[in-house]
Length: 224
Image 1 (cartoon, rainbow, N blue to C red):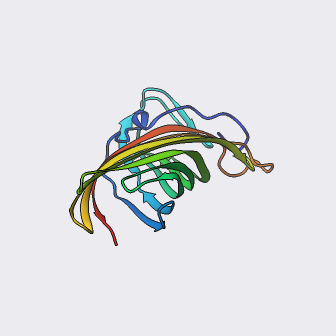
Image 2: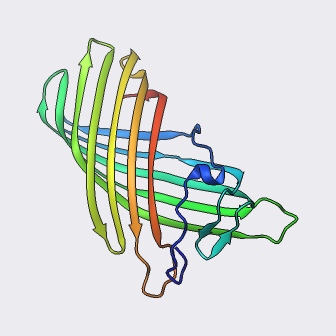
């Protein structure tokens, strides 16, 4: 939305040429405290860009990008996460328990006209939104080299001028080539709706962010 409260245009990444599929890194570190307690910190990079001739006029922040204009876009929606898991059922080869997630969404979007021969037109907005979720997880060891896990979490809440709804789910299978090294094939889904109200002085980011992010990953696993 504009600083004076005028609503912006709803658009998605494809409307401004941003790629829907990208390769990006993901890192995570787990620390187990006995058989029942576990902490995990992670960071997922999600950045894309592209160009497109607009099919409709887009009003973004205090700038209007006219229909027929070619625009260049940069979108960032990185996610930092901290997850605590407590296994209320913990056996030698399986766990079932509660998962609590906290995190931050680093959202940044910038648009500009792609034709450098014209008068520059650009606009950008960014917001760091807190996220959280609550749900269940399960983990199974299949044989001596394989283990699998899955989790599903959700939460709705409001902090200051930010109202957020979050759904998260994931699954992974790991194959260990040695006691301390292996490979992981995993899938993750995040659906986020963040509604940011206007500040009293009307300055700063305000508007609605709603998107889903899916990741299919193949990575290395190291244990100690």
